[in-house]
Image 1 (cartoon, rainbow, N blue to C red):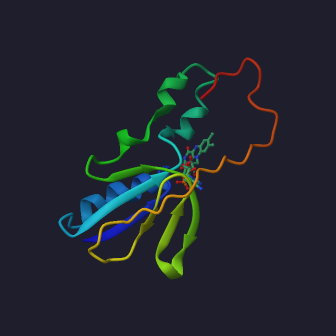
Image 2 (tube, rainbow, N blue to C red):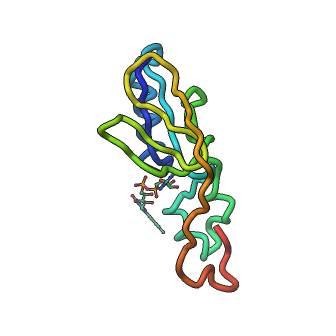
Length: 130
Ligand SMILES: Cc1cc2nc3c(=O)[nH]c(=O)nc-3n(C[C@H](O)[C@H](O)[C@H](O)COP(=O)(O)OP(=O)(O)OC[C@H]3O[C@@H](n4cnc5c(N)ncnc54)[C@H](O)[C@@H]3O)c2cc1C
């Protein structure tokens, strides 16, 4: 079984997963998408929230909703990409090989690291959270 690994389930990753899911022979290919969380933001819709045209719930969905059910979805922080080794290290879960070998991924567990804190002053008081 060949493995296709998509890092990031934002706009690009979600589109690639759906396009390639239609085009690839799924008896030959396993598709896996990794993202750090399961929260999909429809960013263009943000512009309509202040005007009440969209509510925050209209622009925040679960990522799983936009992925075909037979695409694997892994929630984990991508820590390191090792292209020479065809490997990706995930901070809180596993190391997935992306080689075309028929062996299943063999996770090596690493301790979860805290995410870097964000800079900035946080959300504006009174602004809807999305
Ligand atoms: C207010 C607003 C309005 C917009 N309007 C439009 C519009 O009208 N038309 C248009 O074409 N574009 C619009 N855009 C731009 C568009 O939304 C972005 O260009 C698009 O989302 C980028 O897609 P992307 O997949 O590259 O990145 P993202 O959608 O940001 O996806 C990246 C993903 O990678 C994940 N990720 C990143 N690092 C890691 C890590 N280390 N480990 C695990 N996961 C990770 C993130 O969680 C995220 O889900 C708008 C953007 C904004 C903010």
